[in-house]
Image (tube, rainbow, N blue to C red; front, side):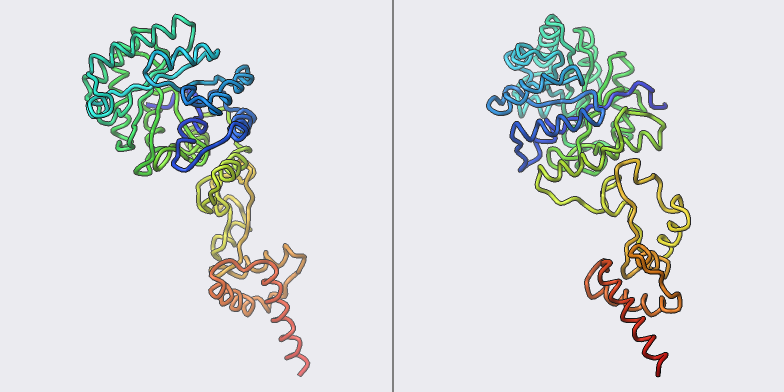
Length: 383
């Protein structure tokens, strides 16, 4: 199947993302993230868990001022009081979290399949009677039996749910297996489905794309892929893969992707990975001789996307793997038109310096090396 044209990206950085171990955001920090998401054009945002109370509840209440700009969704346990609280706050969209695997039902809740079906349908009807958009989970879908998943999906659809979230809660599914779960549900109902994929085996983005190809409409992402354990599908990777590889526009202003990433790194006190796809500092950096030379001649040679498209910046790095073209480019960037005859020796010294430094030769050191070689050449010429 092909990915449908009306897919909807939903960001859960403020809910599942902030549940990353060691992350705890104040109301003001969460508001910064919310505003940044809205400014980037994201129209569906899961904001948090009202039942937590305290400053979390204060933020969720204040967030409603932005409800005209995006669909804001409050997350709830599968408990009547939780859902009622979200409705009483004025939330027009609620999510109800309930598991469908026997291990989660038995070990975590001590409940039966019959109980979860009754609870789901009762809560859906309550929220629909209040006029809300209702999303509900099939948590731990990777360990949910096919027949029960289909039965549960049919029951929540009949109760009036607006969508069913298929949560690969511990990230154990392959893309093929996740697509199968979507297909199983599509066999019994036309209910909108949402991909919610964890990244324990590094497959969250791939599983999401597979779920969308199998017919899901909604999908979850987090900025920088943060979230429980290994995190969630990365916002930038998901948006750009859909745009460039599948021709699907999510409505996100891609120029904001780098600044969104920087904001979350700041708020989580983490250092960005230079090689993180789309937003990493190395993504548009070129050092090796062949790559630098090719990029200087035609940027399309070694770049699949334009850095400006995602708010990034192209760099030619001078280091151990550089060639003469890269060294010359580094000097030209400092206003020096290098003597081509000097470049072989400059390159030898650059490589030695890079090994000694354990990385990049910065512009200041490059200029020192070039001046040293030039002065030696002038002295030799005057002998």
